[in-house]
Amino acid sequence: MQTAVLTQRNFFNLHKSAPFIDWVIVALVFLSGLLHPSPKVFYDSVLRIFLIITVPLFTFAFLIYRFSEKYGNRIQGERGKNPPIAEEAFGSARAMFVVACMAAWPTGMYRIGLPTGIVWTIKEMGLNWWLVVLEMYAGIIAVDALTYWKHRLLHTKMFFPFHKHHHSFRDPTPFAGFAVGPLETVLTFFPLLFICFPPAKHFAPLYFSAIVGFVFLNLYLHCGVTFSWLEKILPRIGLNSSAWHNVHHSDVNANFGEVSFIWDKVCKTTRADYEQKRSAAIS
Ligand SMILES: [Zn+2]
Image (cartoon, rainbow, N blue to C red; front, side, top):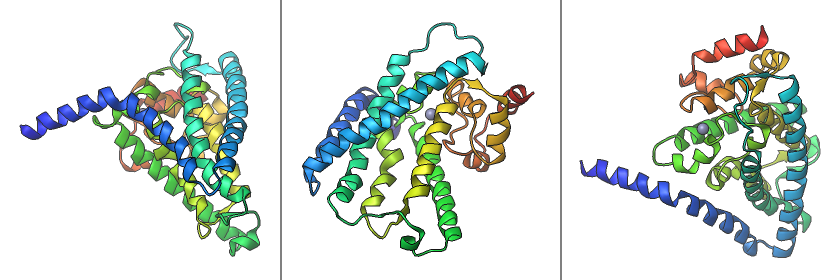
């Protein structure tokens, strides 16, 4: 009984304090630059990375939004009202600011000549090219597992207050693709910090290609429409699709995978009507 009361109280407190805690996290990741070997280069990197990410991100979000609304098949029927694009864009911009602060750590170190885990040639990796590809593939599976379990954690009563912002967009547009809270942003993107450690080698051409691929996949997952050719291709290569992830926005307790559906299949957290939606999308 006592445990139940304490749990409810904790939930209630976090429910009220989560927005404040999230802004504290934004401040802390920004202020962490004061501990960087070169704070000046760190803050310069934050600004540059933020612009390098957000300008293309919002440009493609806008283009995909306009294209998908015109040519895609709406999953939840015609929109009853205009989507809250300004709120979605604000959420995504705040998350990308947190990402920029984290990415500025290895970027700043690289810019001032300190060793990092970023390498540009197969030779520097010390592996055959096929082992580099295999390592990258294993890395994607590991990150997918990390994001799946992070997402399950954020759907517990205690932590949902840190995730509910993303679920305020039940019928999202691409602008909501990265509209997640700061705590969730840190839990999703903290592997960026591994680059600070030289032994953790990242083959830059494949690494950045995978990130760009993930960004475009995420924009499609949140566009609110399906394209039959993408719904055919993506599941065949193990990746989520718009029909898949839209179920998570319309019914929050299923389809937690953020890159692939592998862990949803393993843990039986899929929604049965996804297959109907996908069939409708590709027919
Ligand atoms: Zn969720």
